[in-house]
Image 1: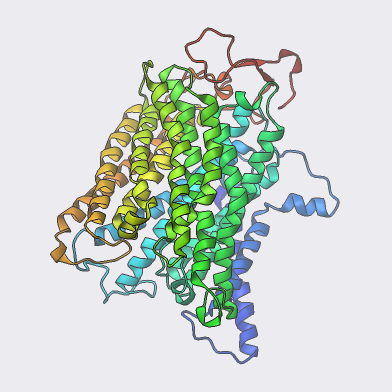
Image 2: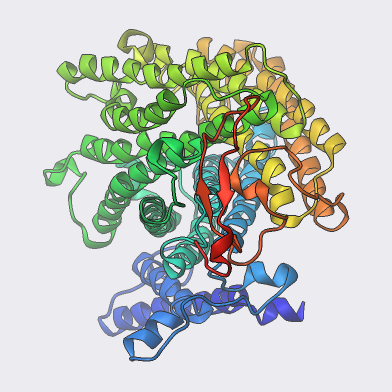
Length: 630
């Protein structure tokens, strides 16, 4: 534990607390001098908490040391081109590293922690829904300054956003680890900015979770005004946490684009890149160009609450529907930020375990860019019931249906790749196949939400909840697990246990289908989402009980995964050589990768997915350039 208490993570968290108290105390002192009395919950007012939380982020940055090299450079001091890690073992992951592989693992570990936290929130409110009438989240109880229904609202709202942030961090984890390896680079284009992108996400997650203890909020994960304009101070922590996490997403996206454009290996033309790189580029384009819109929308509500501005207050000339336009202009393209890397993982792994060339490589590559492009013109299908101008409904309906075209390209390619292939089904392949089926269910349940006439009936019902979970689990969660099982041997030099991996899959998959099909069923019966109770006369008690049992089945499967993951780090079977018989560059060298990836650079001389064909391979190492990186 001595290593933990001297780590950058611990120092950053301590300084974040100190900064928060200093900022909040400063505002409180100024208000006292001005004769203003505190009326908010706890001993700090809302402005004090907001300024304190913001200052806490700055103190975290300074205390962790992530900006130290930049401060030295500003003072004219020399800094090394690339730090060698000063720590070994698990301590590498709680200290600052410029190695993209370590940063990718750091992202992934925090994502897994947040998945566990967000999933726990879901189990709590899912248990409450197991039977009609309030069971334990009653109006009489009091926790964190909230009664039962208020706490239900907070847990439900936090479940949504915590899971979204965990997905964003998980995506950054996969992309950070895999992209430089696949293009032959020794690191990301901007290693310090890459590290900063990760470390800024840590205080963001802390601020987001702190909203639970500061009165919570009752808006759902969307934060719509006017509800968000009058919610407790926890609402501001929600806004500030997401706003801060947005910086991580933007900077990481910029780094990925620069890395792929400038650092590809010799001979790696655009149409010879691994298909996952195309997914990473499409994802980064969306994140770079759209993330600021959710940050802006949340920032405007923060200012409305703090300074009395009327951006979304009709009494002051504002319009709450404007918030929805700003919010969804990011938040629907963000769905493709979630799923494009996952679909890239599916396309990357499928040929490896089918032993056939990836069918329609160019079409899949272009379909990723097509999804990214069309994704920017579909946002208003979330607003068919909002009072939006009616003449906008039809064009947004058609644009939403249009996104099925590039998505369908991927499905047809996957089916054609599978056709008559020599299919093997280790754990990564099981999750790839699960991703295809689950995402298909999300796709088939999507058009009713895109069509105005049906969406008017389905909107804000549990049908939407089921559809969204199908899309996110199929587009990200299943591929995320596939990626971990697949690249874990490359990262650690050991294999994860296959038996436990298959138990994980075969327990999670049917539980998930029961959960989402049940959600869509009760949604069609009229069950509203985001409510803590429902009428027993509706006869849904037995269905909700089954859904709750299925939810716990998913949780048990993830618990098995966690045990498998951490046990395999020490006790897993050693992974020697190219264990998946892959053509990808990272599998042509020993595991785990050395600090600077490739001791000898390579040249691309073939196609990435020509499995089963007689050729000279995908890459050739350049023997005459020993010691050079990238």
